[in-house]
Amino acid sequence: MLKEPIKMKNERHGLKLKELQEINNKIYKLEERMINDEIETSTYNTWFKKLQLEKRLVERLLPRLENLFRL
Image (cartoon, rainbow, N blue to C red; front, side, top):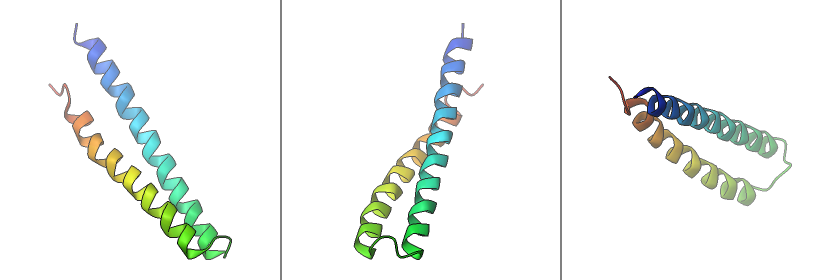
C-alpha cells in the first residue's frame, strides 16, 4: 500500500536531480560564453540570476523529497 507513494516520491526526486543537473549545465555554458566574449556582462548577469534562483528552488525541495515517507 505504501509502495506507490514511495515510488512516486522516488520519481519526483529523480526528476528534480535531473533538473538540478540541467541547471548546472546551463550555468556552465553561460559562464563559457561569458569567458569567450560571446555575450555581454549585462546578459550574463540577467541569466545567471534567473538560473541561480531556479537552482536554489530545486535545492530547497530536494531534502524535503528525500525525507518524505522515510521509514
